[in-house]
Length: 258
Image (tube, rainbow, N blue to C red; front, side, top):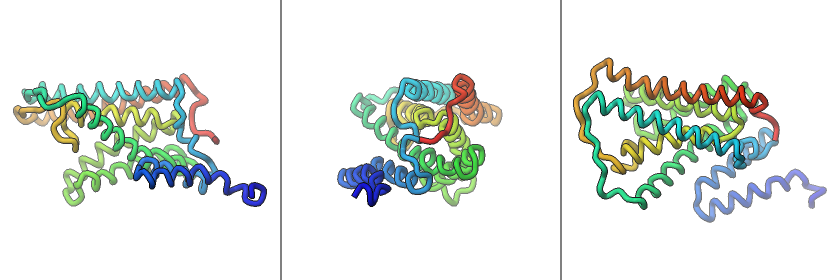
């Protein structure tokens, strides 16, 4: 059997993973199995090219990426509060259980998106059209995806805002993978922003979480530009410079065969 069908042996772990995912109704395992199959069929590679095996280096990147995103997201809301005079209060019903469940939901949503946009499809695109074009393509797809995931399709103003906001984020996340050969940094950046936004400031699909807000005055045009610069410029720049620093520190880091 091994000598006659040696190429089939490498699919056994994928089949087992897919079966477990379907049995447990675990979408993340199914998604990971699909990524694995795509890599095997198209690039003759396995999931090691996604940099999923934890090491001291990529776990550090996860932590630093999380901190960068969390700090800039908190600064984003601090500016909004300073300009508008909004008042934040702690939700008395929020507890450790809700924090853990909300955080896990946020992490799962991040992993779903990372396994779609920064995993096998991005790796394959990099091999086919080069890193720069692949990163831009991934960012464009990420922006368009949010038209549908956030129910904005048909509202052109909201669509334009989402495309710019999530497209810029998508570009940074895709660049993080292309430069580090690991999903850990994009996951850290993505999770850091979403956790602070969704769970700390209650601005995501989870509803009211840690903080509730009493809105103050609307922003002036200048204040609105300053606030938007934090999300669209300062945070992406901070992440970009960290990625560039990692590349200079480890010039051999990058996509390579596995």
